[in-house]
Image 1 (cartoon, rainbow, N blue to C red):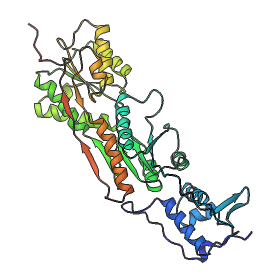
Image 2 (image 1 turned 45 degrees about the vertical axis):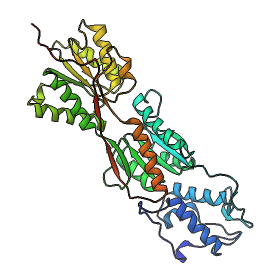
Image 3 (image 1 turned 90 degrees about the vertical axis):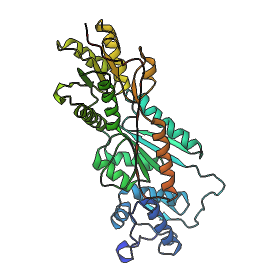
Length: 382
């Protein structure tokens, strides 16, 4: 067996990092090595440069190198000897041509863990599945926890053999940037990353929250409260901005708004409403919960811990128009979100990327209010 050729003695082909029209980095590297083998630069029995040397030579990480070598191995061009290295096959075995190639899309999200996946995200995922079924493609869900480092997530993507990845929800921006730049074609859903040319599907959180608060104001409510989501969530900040915009337009001082902490979970809405009732302050006549699950919890607390009735004494409005909205008593006025459409568009953008059709785009989807029985005209007592 021969020693590997020194990479610095041969011309190195630069990998393209232009995301508008390029193959995955690992496929580019795989193609380069295939060409080198075909041209005789690496002959049968030659040992390839180590993963560290290849990574340094082509300015990629070892995950990319590992995927490239796996591609060569699947083609029968190389084989590995434990504790020795990777060698060029004496008699390359071609890829099977009879098997149908099935497109596999990965879904990576910190939301896909037990106790954290709500109806809102499940409807988005169903939209993805519906669209993928049209092209008989697979969806592979890769749940990751916040403590999982970025390189581990990249390893998950690599090991799954994915053709593309959809990132759902919030991520650490530097880690997300590296995953996008070093991984397969990708789309962001319900989260934006500045300065990176990547297809993005967003929801008009600010506009939806404006509609919710404007609805309460139009019914004559001026003692108002909101039940927030987690402070670190972008949706929380954007929806609060929309609330403030509606208050400003109506001439209602922002400091008149009562704000209660929530967590986008039913239990969080229950706790916030109970705190509202127990605070000793004047109970608001209009409450905007930043999602339907918290609104359901708030209505439960209202029923369990007070004699107030909705909507006679207090109006409650939610956000998302999930199944929670029609399961409450009374049925919930809410902001309707095109959740399934978000999932379908994400898949459509992925397919367009794989066909090299378009440059990256950002799509902002609108919302609309759905008025049900949980909100009513404010009528002053007496």
